[in-house]
Image 1 (cartoon, rainbow over the protein chains, first blue to last red):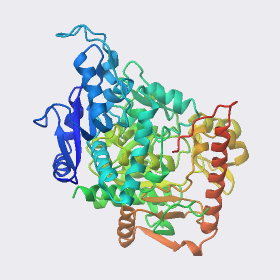
Image 2 (image 1 turned 90 degrees about the horizontal axis):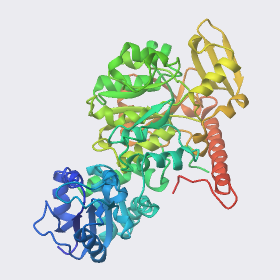
Image 3 (image 1 turned 60 degrees about the vertical axis):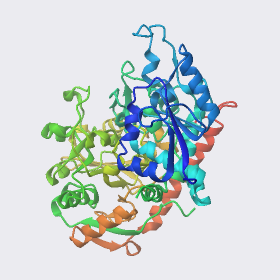
Image 4 (image 1 turned 180 degrees about the horizontal axis):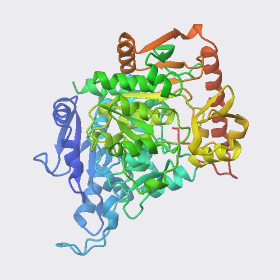
Length: 253
Length: 308
């Protein structure tokens, strides 16, 4: 299947929730595998587990820097992939693994975890804990169109992926505080409510139309910041929402 | 400019044919009638709207409990709520002129409220949030496809609650609980009292109370709603309606066929689209200027631009 893109899945310190989110595309996942994606390696869902040369690799989980194998795997992933996608809160921002202090059985000395962007260059972020099946699907279809599509499809896929590439360039830290420092403090919040609905742990409520974060509940997944329409917003993409949704749905028919 | 009114398939001046809705609604009762019809027809099975404390007291299961002490919630403070019936819809009708974070309920609507086909009404920025959430569902698993009807309302700017409090109680010298209706129109901010008194404030007075986040907004007529509506452009008691998306087109055609709305061609009414276009351009150029000023705000330091 020459026209498929090759994809790998590296699983580091993550809970498999991102894997489950990918699988939760159900028939959509089968269509993806059938037509667009040659899944070269992936723990859990494929027989081959060792990292190979691929077009796109998805990485779930953060890197335990006390674990030689994890460090070797993230480096090898970078060396062998044209595009590296950080999948989920842990790979992008550290998420719940930021709170590790070590001491857990059976590797009590594994205490320091970093988002993959602190060790390698990452091209695209898919934030969220767990990331939604639909965002994974959209990025997978866009990656296919970018590498194998017509010039128009390439342009559309580039525009779609651009904000997620900019999110990857922005850095490896995002939590409720980013809403304060980069949205509210910058005079950009207009109280739409997106952040509260995006928060997986219900740490955000609205008081008088403005977000209030229960910062001790925040797990640092970055969902609120990236869902906020005033963190990043692309008119080019969003104004064509109908056409883009139709393109993606048509690709999966 | 040319793009100031967004993409649309049709535009009319309309009002609801339901007298009861017109009694409770802000202008032509478009949102209330549309959602009422969509509920009756099963196009949506519930809608997220901006309700009030009285609504929450009457229908406590339709709002999300948060940390605020219920007794402390003031009159005219919006509370996002889910409505499932025409009666609930009417109980929540009318514009509140301060921030109601309706999008905060979009996920919960499909979870504990169990909706498969959600309606939502919101300002242009909230329509932007909805479309971003459909294209980039970061924290919105299985939500995007459940949004069955998004109705946008025209918006020049919004106010924090405390701004409305100050405008009504300090400038208009009325008590919040004695206010029947608020309105912005004909270049004035109008406060209508329950005993029949009317106070008008020039918009010059209201400007400094506007929410800062509104000053970078480049959308006046909710370009991203399935349908968007507002009073501007139509005669008193009527609303201007833009039908924008395929979903909007289908719902509007069904509602028209069912006799939900009385309409007039927008070209035939005064002040018509000319005023809508003028105000849209005013808002967009003013806020583009704000964005430019933000780019050189400090000394060699810019304020952040959210648009890429």
